[in-house]
Image (cartoon, one colour):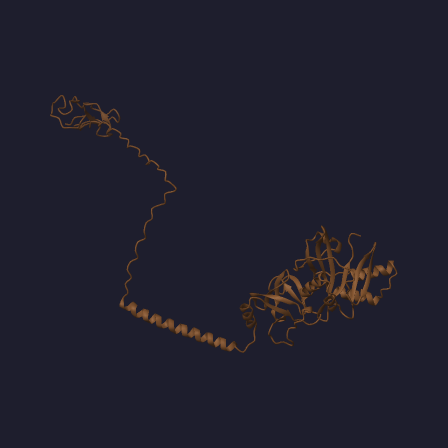
Length: 398
């Protein structure tokens, strides 16, 4: 038998365990019903549960001692390691990259490498041959690419607009016929071609404060053959004539100004006379009376102008309105006929309207002795050249 405490074997009949000293407990013998298996009192003849007679020898089973429950051991809780603050100014350690494995080339790869270089050489020869063939086929064509090369090799290239008389060339915001029209060039206008800015048939040009695209076939470059070589007459370029007129007026250069007057129309002056506005026509300009000294930066700004007496809000400079036509000349002539019985004929008024329709108004805003003034004139395109047609001397202070 075994000790109920330490489980070591003890001698039969011993009262105490020789190992742990615990008292030996006698375990009573138990009997069970042969029919239902329930526990019965020792020596009972009948089962108190099912009533079966216990005729045969009752099997006595020795109850096993109940072992004490083993002690519960709680494992220790592992705490996280303490957090050590990393200094931000200490760079992380640099791990050098592993050296690449040595490259070994087999004998078959060596043979393939030689074949590869042979194939590359053949491909290059084919490409060069195809390029020479393409260039030879295009050598006899006079195309826009020739003009583009000329533009790229020159720091600044100018071209002259070549359109039929009475027609205009549109300057567009984008290289498309559906794009917004920024400006309209008359025949003979000189524009600056921007290098490398060509998209198909469209070339990017600059004119005054405008930059946009025009159809290249209407540009005549210096040195190109056409129905006629580009004229060196600056009278065909609007911006050139504007600056030429202002400079001659500043210097009281009668000769230059009179060369800008059309012989069949002359020059018209619009001036204030008290509360009225008068019109007079002459065949020349004379500086018998000194004119105010005009100072300007000689830069033409192509902008829409308000009514002439609202011009004082603009900063000093040269302004040319190419989008709106004026009617001040024909309107003043009609008013003078109604109010002052002037004798401007219907033919004269029709001529005034034609001059206004085919021209542009120019205003030079300048300061003098603390005041702001303007010099206003009109240029008209007649037979492909710009002419000075009238000068507006009206005083807005009236």
